[in-house]
Length: 107
Length: 318
Image (cartoon, rainbow over all chains, first blue to last red):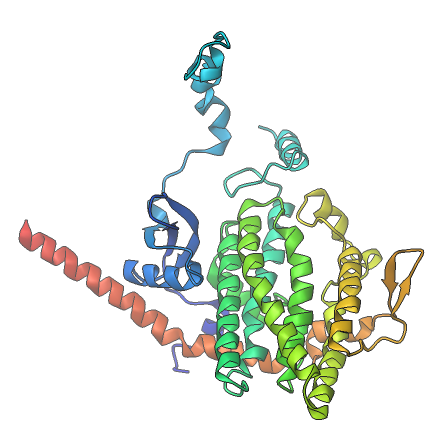
């Protein structure tokens, strides 16, 4: 242990931590990349390698996307009621809204 | 929204089995309980690598060695899924590691027992991982989304751990007299610590009721322990071995196995740092973290330099 790496540093954790990355995996050709979790890595290349070791040990994926978490912007769950309100009263967007005779086929 | 209103909306979601997600409002006590439980669980996975790593170099065949390495690597992954879930509750990885190393955070007392023979790898897989699975399957339905999702992933992988452990014991149980003795000895040493893994009896577990109201826990410690005893008491018959409990007997009225008293004095002792390997385990963790410090710093520095180099190149192009 070097002088500037004292036991108190070890116990309190490091000063410079690796950034957090969100991991998305395509499980097989034809499917979307899906969020599977997150991990820390120094850079994108390491994030992809770590994601391979952590999230695809049993052939769970054939393609990996990594995005540094700080670049993800999210909607606010507290605003959900008003934010999604515009879609709330538009049942006519669903096919079941239209009452058609049973004899009508292939539609 | 006012605090009581928030609280009502929160409990209503829980009651309807709607998962709580990181940005949702949650009571401070719920957040704290989750951080404590998830981080302790993560620490257990990481410290749990140590007793098994002890046997990687001495596994009896290449097949066993490859399996054991894969299992220990899984435990590292499980620790990581759980640390990541805890981090969504606004605690940093460094802070959690710091709590483990300073002794503020606990980990499962089971990992403070030594792994003396190869049969211990079998007993750990069968009993310790078996008890863990019993605990973890209901956690796949825990009310906090990131925790439940991590547990689903873990449970999928954990099943191989238990099966390979039972197979190790099965092979030993059909081996020489010395191998049979080694098998029984490992079961004798790991049985009671495994039974203790479910934690204190229900009447001595003050947090259980709240955790169940919040649907973090779905069953009490004693319910899960009973299930584990019932399953194990049957499984051991296939090994032709015995569990070290003379009071273990099928109770026709309860439709469960009765078992003898648990030595809670031993449990508290090990939990409070006086188990056979507490100091060794913590020393190994702190040492590994300290030895890795220069690697973490170098990797960060490398990425900084790379980023700087790239921005210089971009300026050159412009």
